[in-house]
Length: 208
Image (cartoon, rainbow, N blue to C red; front, side, top):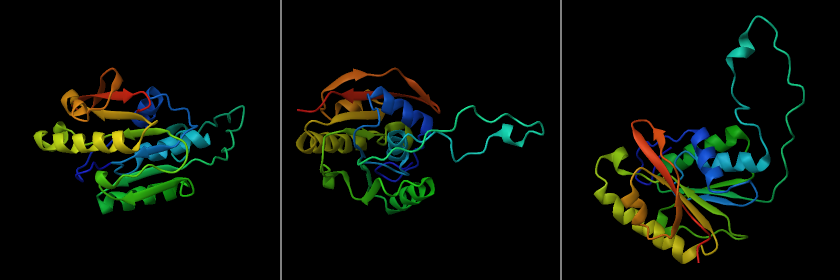
């Protein structure tokens, strides 16, 4: 995944699912990621909403065993039909191209949208409120976190102005950057190991 500045910032699918769940996401609401990078959060949210099994596109070691392995007792659930849309945005064109390609490989083109735009152009999607989930850049990823305070402040201002009724989840290693958004965080999650860093989820109740 790439952050708003285009730097590498990988977030594993398992971590995206964890943070979505910690925000109370159950697959029944739209999700927006304004700094989507390769689209991990958006795609994970869409798969959860569709009821698609995790890891369905991967091959596991047991499949290559010489001894036959019994098939699962029950078939995987069929994907659900949904009317929700899942939106990612990033100002980096390469990130958006990559996110679109990832959506195509996952068969999620019909429910996902990826837009090349900065945070200042972020618009609230039509329809009911949902969840804004974002893994912005933070100091440990680009070396100098001072230049990021303006970015976090701008993100918070846009969300407070345009996303009334939506909940927000921000993943960062720096509590000071989270506070720079001026968002009314209701709870901070426990630390999660992310390479050499410890990151936390900062989340809000529905915005006023």
